[in-house]
Image 1: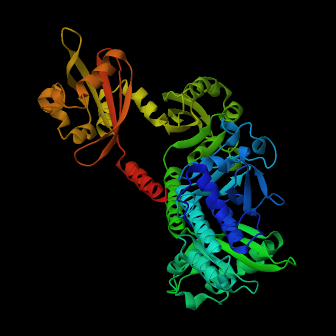
Image 2: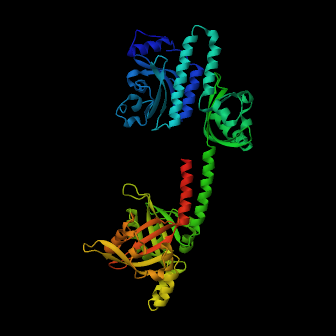
Length: 561
């Protein structure tokens, strides 16, 4: 079909009318396209819309019974044919081009629209294959590609239909070509007859299961399901499918030719004959084998992490923005003396007011602060099932967003024994030194040195335990009294600015907490605070194992996204 003497809109309309398709009866081949489009995109409405001079007319209509055309001046498709790319409107009421459109404000209540232009061999855009939803939506890249592919198929079908209008004997050849287009689609498709046997499958279906086409056509579709999926289909899925005419994202296991199992999500539509009986069904499959495997691995990792948290020698929990308990570990339950069903869903204020009202009055301001996005670290006395305990508490905001926290995490370490030791050590420097030297975490006390302008330029070690010396790779006994620049040459020019960082703690009193990776491959959680003016103390804990677990979880999440 050539139109050398025409240009622009006149050329487009001439190409459309040359097809001889306007106002013709529905045809099964085109109806298959709209059913497939709706299925692939997960929407209730799909159309093959041809844009005439004053109207858009539907060659195929899936989901809008009784509608055959609309005026062109309200047609979304009129916008879609202005370019070659797919045209998408995620939320029509919020789009100034369509917010007042009667198809949006009234029936069919269009909220979402996506249309792929039907482009003829001469470049004329005569209409679209479009999908519509009554809720806001957005296609993913795979769905966009499939919609454009279906539009190309329709263009080929219309071209072939025009060529065969005068030669009805070649209809079988046209249907064969359509079937080949169906088979070559990059989607995983199969169609099933009323007897449950496969009528056709796409090339991707064959590649996924490892068969040749002649080996599967005519076989029962259930032959390719695992025994458990066969029973599930027979007893649950198929009875509902034949009643409603559709199913969405059913989880099945298919068995490949080599015997291996693959996980799929199957969605299908039932086509009925003129008497209301089952004619055939069209199904779209999504291979989720890799996703399911990652989910299983992630669940195992979560179970491992849950076990780690549950066995931590501390009280651990998570509370949402309303202060409602969402998770607590075993130590927390044991300490407050309540089972999980008496804790989850209960506000922290209600919980502590009941068991320790006085303690809650001092904790409540800290909760308000952490929900304001500020990390809280403090010591707190709490009445527990074993009596009054002294706890070191850390409250951390969870997922801050625009200045607000979604909730907070809390960790309570029991330091009652440590506090008792501190009281006794006030009269015994020797006992204090013994405790200090044998703490598993690194502890050190320093005095900052400044220049005439008050800028930190060095610091001296006043006290250091063995664990801290081991972390730095120096002898604790010989470090006390020495300057850091003498023990660690080059520290003054280190990009980490250790002297400046710790100097700000000593001079301003603002504590600092950060994680540090050392040359030996270990991770440390470092807390610096000012015990008195001009001094700073450092506490360091080895968190290498925790960082390893976090890295494993992050890697699993990256593979599932």
